[in-house]
Image 1: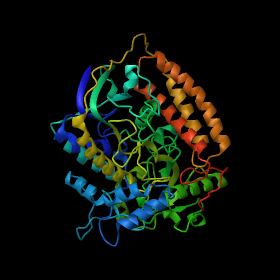
Image 2: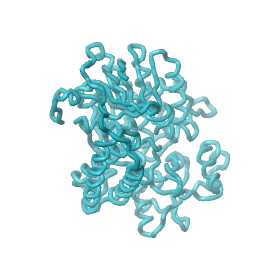
Image 3: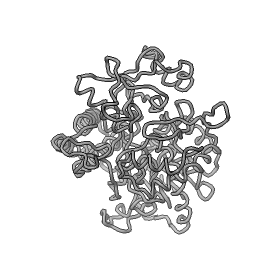
Image 4: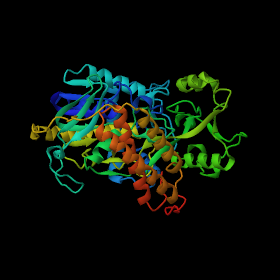
Length: 522
């Protein structure tokens, strides 16, 4: 099947949906999503969205907090753009129907999370992302110009490479003409031609064995753009959330939001003592990279599999009222957070790097934009400040929409693009080749490219990955494509990028911490 649309959006989280709503009045929009529309990282964002709403908070304070968290590697211009546009973008989200908690005075009940100097995180109890996703999908469903295609996997973006023209990373005029999409219902790979394409495919947490990300977070957009010779950067900066629920048989790991520490919960060792003061004067409210390394260090020193988060001293009714999802989840495995400490362990959570974009969300490939976790805007630097990610998605999808609407009338479809050729391909009858390779990849990344790294570990991971890459490419070249095979291929690509950029980073900074290099900035 061949189809033409003005705007092709790949991904159905906050980045893709908000962009679609912005451009839908000016052309036909098609949203491609690999699972159900509501399934993605946005849905699982517990804590909230950071924005300056009331005094004594100021844009300058939020900017400073973001720069400090990013280990001064953040682009100050991008940080300033994002923060100064935060209030308007959040108001827009509220107009779309998102409900955030208010206090008795009628003002928004703002939370404070690690790294923030003021209360500025809007939330909907402890399931903020789910509320945002609900509101956006409702608005999407009511718009006649938007088509949502679920259970469709984007295999590759289309460039002049598919016309037989050589493209490399130095090619100045690489252009995106749309995408090849696997329809899981028909098992056919369809051709979608577009004037403008937005990549909003989210993160890549499933490259690790333990992650808070949903199963669909397999780095598809970043891998596609890298294969298409687009610019990708800062992939070494993988944020491990310090506190996922220790429940070894559950995947993905259940997130214990940082907002619980902002509410007053304290990290403790097995003997009930606080330990964070040894690592940072902010204690349990230090930034995520510091807290994650501290927990990792305490676990290794003492031989523990987990540590504890203690909320027993907090007001019981308020605790349950503010964190009903966490309370219910813990209770389901026999932990009453009002009486018991919560066992926690770090888990891969957020990718601070990705597809390099400018202040308008433009990638290095013409007519191709990126927004959300798959994009590297320069906001996060070496470490993301809590609750800045949903805000970043709104700001850069808005800015991308402005630029796309200026350009779309100047862009023509490329009708010469050939359809996908699957001639000679055979169905892979041995799923074990995919599942076992995925397990190997995740263990390699978790054991050698985790919270603390070394040159020796990275070299070993790189060597192991070369074998997996070769085997998977051979399988890809001869198989009828399936989502699982494509996801494995993308994750191996992501693992390569993380390792390669970690090996090139000759210092410990932010989320990249190597025992072979001192922290120069200290």
